[in-house]
Image 1: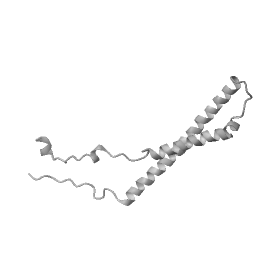
Image 2: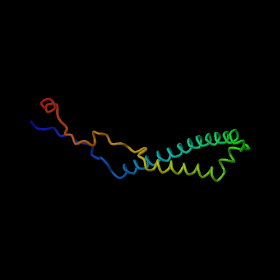
Image 3: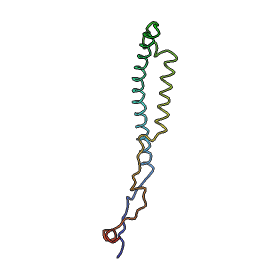
Image 4: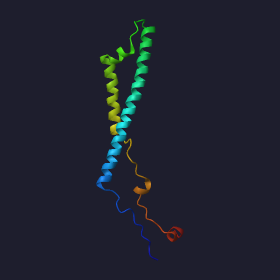
Length: 119
């Protein structure tokens, strides 16, 4: 009995498709960086408020405005340092990259109904 041949897609990959995938991944990473930086800003603002509260109540120092703490060289260094860490992490990670399915990576032979039944 002759074996039935299965034809795959004619065009599996081509330069425009690879470039489109690269651009979509890059746009997704940029959006992820922006959202993560905004979330980090919220977390950092709450941390500054906690530090200011503890500074006033435990050390009995004068209260400072949160903006003054945030705009200080140390505050800016901590904020932008963490933003740099977020950028590096997102760019290195596989966030947004398409994952290959197990079916596409396996080298299984396609079987007809007769072959699958008589194994």
